[in-house]
Length: 339
Image (cartoon, rainbow, N blue to C red; front, side, top):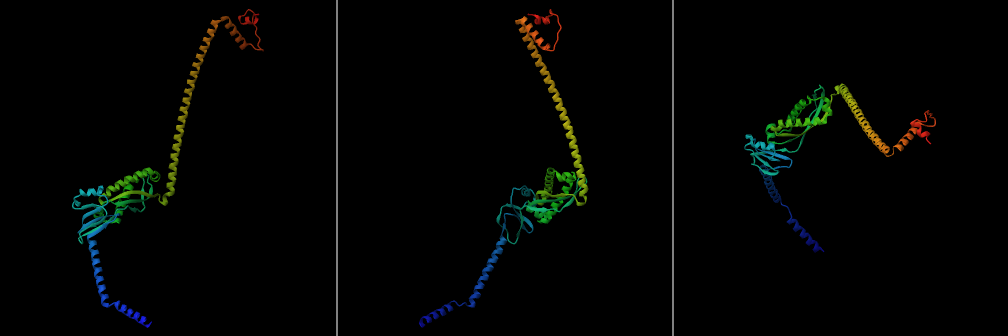
């Protein structure tokens, strides 16, 4: 038993000596590790200097000594991008389309990324004046995007806040002009007119923003209301105007009703006259036919026809209370007295 314990102890001592960590080896390990980390760090720095990525939601501009040399966009056929080819200012600029990994000259060229997503600009509410001298509190918002990153970078400094200021300036200048042409109730109640007006405003704004590489995709009015101090008088005036319009509509309706009734009466009179005329014609034809039948009957047996007609006359003029005084030789009484 003692021999077994001695062998185990000897083996433990040998393994302890074998796995004993020397300080020299630790220093050598960290030296090698630091060298490897330095190599990796330098590799990352150099690779980031040689390469850059453009995400699905991005566009990029590559500059060399603050001069644009390359533009990476979503759609190379976009009219705003195509216009760069005819602009001498961008004659030496390379235009690319795509996403993913791209290369550049290290330390000389740098990149700036711009979003290609829709951006929202919520304007502050401002007062505008209508044609009928009403003051309206108008609150808008606009959806816009960076259409041409090169123009956006050159002409507006690539700054979204600067773009918002220009959009706000153009929106309200045009909106004031258009709203000044209409009355307040049109702006508040006529949605179709307002939608057409906003489309015209959008077209105008885009014509002004095109040189800046920005395009407004949609403009909407969030709120149109009267200032608090003018609401009572304005509502009263609007009520009076609506009542005047209602009175006009009622008068027009009554006039049309009278016209319709008169036309109906005229048509009824015409129809009655035509019906009477047709009835008289039919009666005349019936009388003529009856006379014809009578004549034919008379020609067949004149004596019998005379007898039958006389009996009809008796029936129509003589009843129980009738007293007739005639001579026996009268033609009218010959059938009465005859045996």
